[in-house]
Image 1 (cartoon, rainbow, N blue to C red):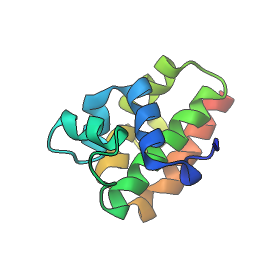
Image 2: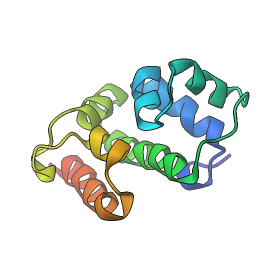
Image 3: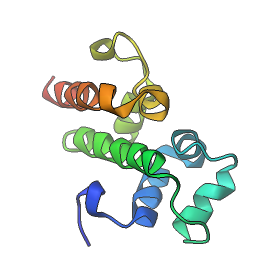
Length: 118
């Protein structure tokens, strides 16, 4: 077992995200048509989604874990879902879900790190 989201089994990534964010938010990030798909990912009843979607879910977990180095899971969840001044008041969860990762990943990671250092 590993603590790095990039090396974790996909089902473990999804399970940890659900524990912090809930199925609805994980489904939104993962572009799942129903929350039951999220449960199927955890139980390996459905294969991992397209690589881009999987990367988004892994990034979300990475961001949450950065926040959790100093704050609780509920604070990490609130950070991901709240307007962020480091991101021009965009919602980190929206950027993770829809923005081109090549353009926002570094910015998101920097915003999470800045929050922890406040």
